[in-house]
Image 1 (spheres, one colour):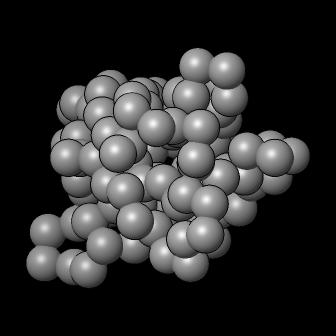
Image 2: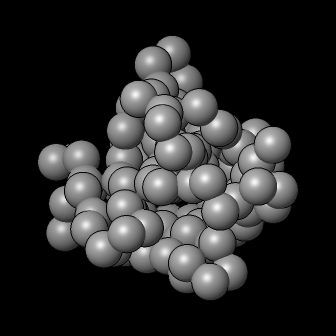
Length: 119
């Protein structure tokens, strides 16, 4: 079993920054990719960013490209999301997720952390 726990959410004014962290526990050696997703009120959960452990390749949603940076510490099995130039429409619950060896979809999810950006 793998467990994920997010931290670092909060409230910030537009233009500000926040850094989210996601800690893993359990059988974390099976993780091949980690990612961040978000769900705004009344909307479906959406992809934000992901990182591949093998070579640290990263991918971003177009809406956050250039403003958000995903990074990870493979030794500690931690993943981070640095969010800069935040906008009110970045307001959402942010979820950490993981893919394990053999997974075709994201199969492990954290509980989420709230990010609120005020104008």
